Length: 164
Image (cartoon, rainbow, N blue to C red; front, side):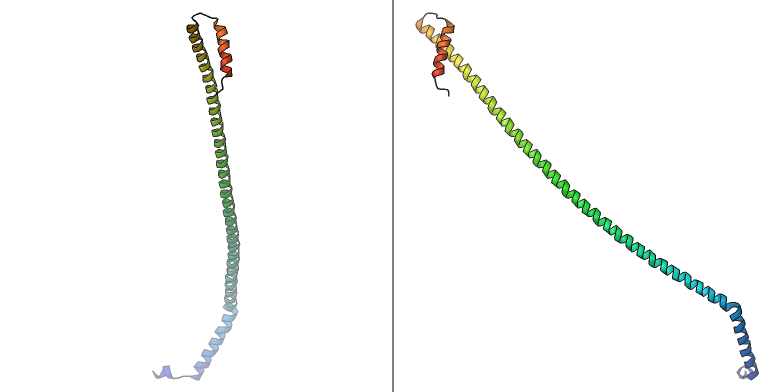
């Protein structure tokens, strides 16, 4: 065990010389390629970072643009809904007005029809009364007069009566 613990200056110098030779050879043979590999890896990482930053910026702009389009679409949808409600209210108002006009026309037609029926009924009643008066007069006078003459007389009498 003493040999392991004993330090020999010659061995130490040769170990240092070997190490320095190894460093010089390593520097000439491998160090440049290792540095180049590290630099290439660093450049690739930096490029990936730049691409990610650019992609993030593009995604942010797409998100902003999509949000703006969504807001615009919502505004257009709200405007369409408001316009649709206004049109529906206008159609309802028109239909209501037309129904009111139709109702008034029907009422007016009914009133005119009632008036016509009333006039016809009054004419029929007058004819019937004239006929009854002629019959009554015939029976009273017990003689037959000209019917045409009787109708004319009765009509003139009825014209003088108030029209109620």
